[in-house]
Image 1 (cartoon, rainbow, N blue to C red):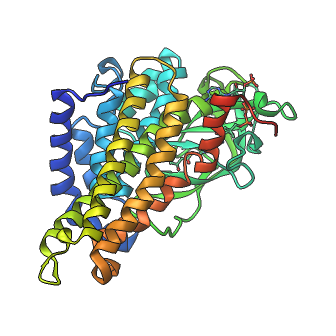
Image 2: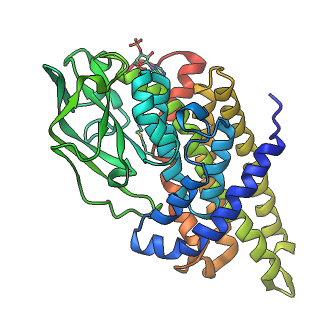
Length: 383
Ligand code: CAA
């Protein structure tokens, strides 16, 4: 398909870019060093009405579209990949399942504060023994009268204790596989719901990642999302959209590294001329620009398909896999262009190099993306 952004998309890009440059960029070194969450910046971003871009105004959102949201993640990630994933996990993972599968009461109670940016969302799927094999969920939810009793734990959860509202997946009917998994809306502060320590991560250190621990947590029956047994499908269709967010994050990280390397290559002189005029560097820049353009088309067209309610699971898997793969190549080339200078702590390109790697791992490893892509092309592969 042919793809073009509108003036409104580009105006939004300019607005988010200015925010990222003025409110996030000055903090990046410290956030990365201290493993610190950009609380004030996220609050300001929320006040700008950016935390619910694709959701309708009647549910607290901006009434914009999926592409605007992808552009916002891209622009935050261009400056700081950690800040980008905070938005992505909130919009795609924490809010979307409530928007798509919630009752009117659930939307009023939980989506409105999420989409308006008053509250932050998170998504609890991954467990110690259920990573790529999400169907291996072991957390349980047992119905006792008017509530479910939740027991178990989730690992690698983005936004973790910074969030207020969680969509959590648990087994309600054992021994029937994915059809026995259900989804629940869980609130921070409920008795028995605690957090593990923050992970000390290689990159995206400004985002908060920790374990969720459930010890006899009473979840009201009305917080079941969808029907019993629909949890796995809710998780999978949520991840179809989430992967657009991670693709946009990878795109932004790569774009930032590319721009930094381009600028540096025009200033840095060796052998009597700027290094961008040496063919070895010029060709690297040419390849980086081509990869970025290809990736951007994939990401934006997946967002556009989702916006237009067309099937997009194949395209979002392609966008996530391709963009995160080329992101690693682009940040590697960018650091190479900087040479020894780029290897130093405090350099944006050094942080981008570390931030990039996670994009090939979370929201489905790139191996799982290839499973998804292949299953669309040739049908489901035997287990
Ligand atoms: N949408 C709706 N339903 C779907 C679906 C989709 N995209 N994909 C599968 N389903 C349905 C199937 O139709 C099937 O339904 P029936 O049984 O009724 O026929 C059911 O779900 C089971 O499907 P599969 O047999 O294909 O499931 P599987 O067990 O083989 O798993 C998988 C498929 C693609 C490997 C899946 O487990 C998967 O995506 N794994 C990766 C998990 C993942 O991405 N985790 C990321 C965690 S979140 C995160 O990382 C957040 C963060 O920090 C930012």
